[in-house]
Length: 379
Image (tube, rainbow, N blue to C red; front, side, top):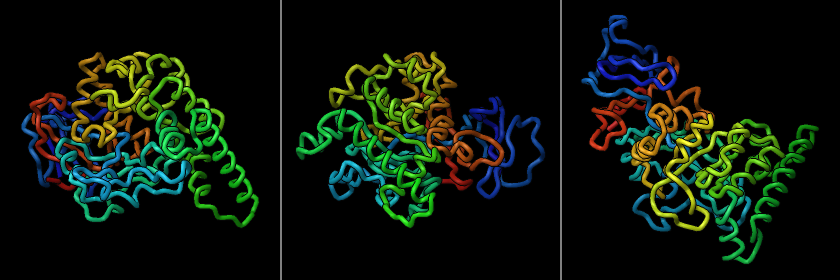
């Protein structure tokens, strides 16, 4: 199929004022300036002067596990019985029939990182899924696990210290539990490598993290919590993204020096707890000015996932350049989850997850004209 006659934003491979994208069997095969395109005899979708972009991606959500319109029946985000649950797999809790999924897709969001919540010091295994029409979550998965979800700050100490009277009751205990668990996993891995016959599901889940095959996505709002996450990641040589990074402005030099991809957001709405006060909408522009590539998130269902393009537009209003805003909800989100070989930009060989908008994607009156996931037209 070919999509043509629109402003093509590839993210990494240039902009074409009258562009086209070809794809076959769900994979992009060609793109560029329509005037230079080879003759095409297959099915053609006319963008009618709209915008052609890779599908948007949210770097941190709870879609499918904190289901829209549900109470406890559809709330599977936090296993609040133990502060260390790395063997929890988010794919076992995702409901592909969550009504939030088609809403997000119709806004041009075609993929999302789905994470366990932030109640636990180590909450479990995140996954990248496509927001396609499916009855089986296994067919939605791009990568699982894509990260280990962890948390600093108020959430673990509130759930366990305040509510249950057990550790962690302080930020010190949270960090200590994290270190102890990582060291135990590292020693377990060494014993297995030496030939010992061992099986511990919690430690097994942490081996890809210790080996740097996947990153830690560490919930950290406050500046000191961000630095704690960076400190522990350095100690154990972990790949890292801080999640939310709400009050990150005071420590941007440290974030830049660490080389991490911070995940920022949701950045809109009232501060729900003390650790989120002090955040600014200008943080995206400030990170970008320091040379830091970051990804945006809605933290769905804190902010509805279908509002992701609007969140990006607010960062532009607050000083971020448009290209960086586009990157924050495409390629940078894909990089943070380790799926940039498949998602996040228009490139030959990548998945044909493409959205056509009838106007500028950040304008409040713009609608999606067409959504393609794996090359298939979605509703």
